[in-house]
Length: 313
Image 1 (tube, one colour):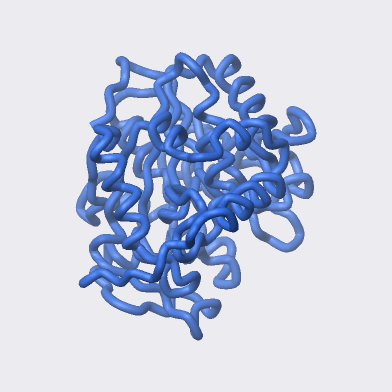
Image 2 (image 1 turned 90 degrees about the horizontal axis):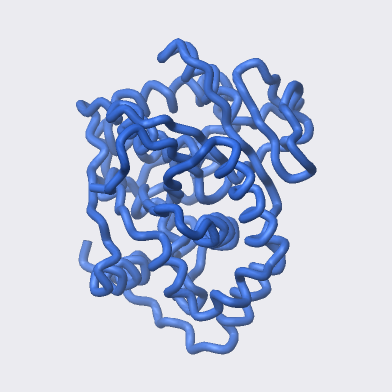
């Protein structure tokens, strides 16, 4: 589906915060199975400076491994991911973590990783679809961190760059995200020959069984307070659950909508996704996620907002 050179050293990065790097694991598993060297990165929501044993590269970039201890409040899926990986594969793996950075400083960290890890490709994975959004959609969700990751990867000139979106449908209940808006953006990319393919994460697949085991392990270790809606929705969909699901206590009021569509991974040429943004030049100069938020909201205020559109599914 994605053209990789043999035994490529590839960075698989979670696009947004939290569990996006976990939802990106099926891509990592597939690459590993095919003989590629896989590295992981996360736009983390963890209090990374409070993770005991994390290697500080600079004030924005940290390396987490299985020997680290989560912060006192307990939230750090990256540490538990590393521990599960070692238990399952008998191998050491790190997750390169960064937080609260805009496009320009994150591009500098990607460039550091590109040189240190001798990267031949980057794949950025969004658990959700709001990373496709520009700003004039009916409801945006939270596209700022997704945009930072996508555009920072875009700035790695000369390197093959790809992106993927998964867990379709899970944002609509909580955020009123209209998936007609996401499908329109996908259709535009398909028209531009930027769609590279679609793959379903089936429970009987190598990637599906591994993700199910990994998410179950991380959820058990972190406790129900920190269970992920997005990763949980992928597991629920693999279990054949359908419709509104109360996956955690946090979605008692607003259940998560789960369906077979949740299992799809949509793959695109990353430069095409980046270059579709009308404010690309300004976004590339942002230093913080707050600046990105202001830029996206400014664009939103300058455009007619797309009316609510429902689709017959």
